[in-house]
Length: 147
Length: 131
Image (cartoon, rainbow over all chains, first blue to last red):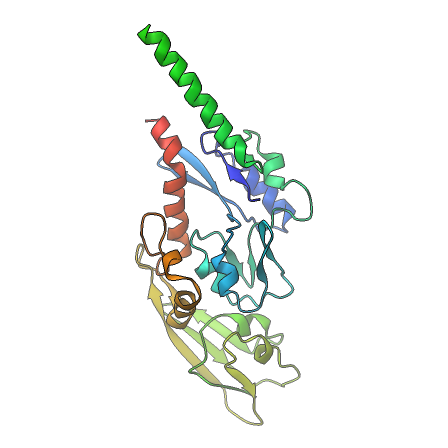
């Protein structure tokens, strides 16, 4: 259950970054990047099913745990292999590794609760429902034009 | 004092991170240099935490250092990782997973450039709709 991103909604305000930073002692686990002045993209851990970071981790600090990739700071040695093993570059390491923990054990990640544009959600279908709705609207408008 | 089997050292930063007395220092530039100074041996944290099991406690020895060439990122050419660390990733990650959905091998690309590639991919729907 990762955090799903609807890039069409993201306004690039970085509220998620600030909220994440507050929640995790000054180290944000989400980064908002800007693409060509046209879009803003929040990047964070995908909680991969077959996580390469967990495969590479020497100390067992990173493990796949059901729907998430959990991180145990007490086991982390800060070797930095996970930052190199993540295909998306969303694990950071500064003495200790840090990555999205979905604000476990709280029910809703802080970034999702904070996002003012509702671009982040924990419900996979939200993004797709919106896309389907938009497609349906567009096709209706097309049909009306041709009539 | 600490002694090292240099063939097992990965050039990671675990020992320099865990040393409580700061006797192990790490410097990054074109090369990564890890310097070990004489310590009082009241702990063996570096020995315990070394991922490559390269360190051991020995009765005597001098200060020493080990250096690693840092591999440049294939996109931005910034040196970012030691060869043994990348080798570990190539070994533990299944071959088909070492390429992204577009067939680009990500192992020798630095995390910063990986994020930028991910940004381009993720931004596509928004960029298209705002053309």
